[in-house]
Length: 552
Image (cartoon, rainbow, N blue to C red; front, side, top):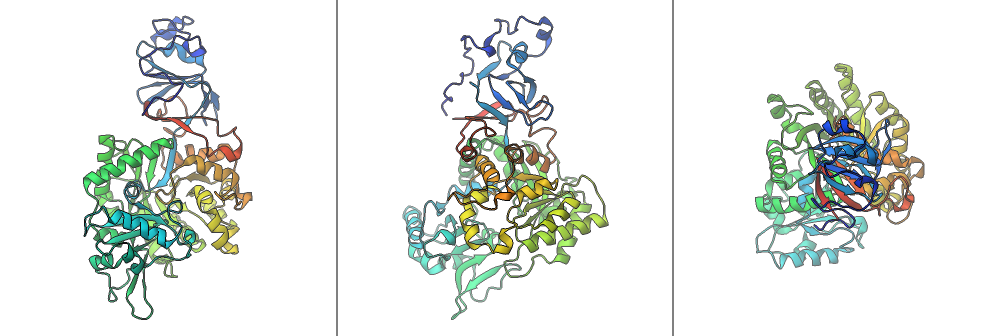
């Protein structure tokens, strides 16, 4: 990429008169010779508006970096003694410098795959006819018999206000098996050849917690499957290594362009094989952001038997995260049952792992709280930082119970922006008044971190920050304004709070000496611009471990 306008290129000293250029050829300021004994910095950011999020020093003008760590935070004069003959100096021209963003809940491998798929999101298709046309277009350039993957549709945004079915996908192609994934990740549609390839017929029993929708007259599957994504993916041919490399390279650039320096992979199907794959991407430089990888309950014993637990450093910038559990009620019944959930949570808790429980609906949130309370009553433990993922509908009584067990909430304020119109139209009034109650959770003293759930929504922290502050949807509609939070609190959700959620707040989330040098340069200060302009703030540069990983 081209160097960002106004930034010095590496190795080209700028002799212009400027506060951050007042140094002698030997790299010293000439003011304090004792400072010349200090090791020189590799990178200096000066003439900046630094939002440190460090209560001890909230604002600064300059940052010095040596290796992958922050050496000094202060004024332009403070960092001059650290300038050496090989120090790169970046004049920020008064732009904002903040801690690197951390997406505390996303799915990087699914994001990579989605970027190779046919885009059927609301911006690309507005009807089932549009959807058929886009898939047909991909089919025309795909060898017959190969799978076609399409992603991002949602029935609310289609003119017909319903899911497409197998026979409509057959109109796009009958020569290719097709999998069309719902925007939520909790449903998909297969065409007739896709159903045949996977052996799904009128005789196929529904996996526990799943639904195979069927034609009422014949009993034949109509192609619409709920809570069966893992079932389907395990029976489809995986993407090739070359395809995954290409997809992850695209995902990497997307994440970096949004200022994301760390991600927490919240996929419940994560395994040793996925761990090796993420390590490979990090080692090869295909994935620059640091990774904390959750694991599923199916693989808990395998990881535990090797002595690994939450927080284990796995090398190549990858560490082990929480044990992910998914609660859902697609069939009208809680899956897993409360009894099974209590056992699963207690087992992982007593093994020393952090829990991350996917809970969206009010009854799911309550079941998660029940299980955590039970586990803690059986084996009390402070500092567990057990997490609820999403916590979408949470009334005050559950907020108080969550505070009582000191849970960490990892939610998605960006959903308010991208899906607010749909929430207002479809969520029952009894649930809508408790929808994403970020303000209530924060006021109750809970640590609330944020993620995008990408590829469910774009990985844009700035969109999420604006949504948390304004509670405004993309359409301009306001969703439960009383649950808004302040700008600094919203910024913390994507920085220090996110690091806290993965036990990394001593190294990340604040700009402070000794912390990892993960920083973002923004075109404007998100705590000062008009609230409706936060999401339009541009990321100018993303720095990971003291290296410029991306710049506009």
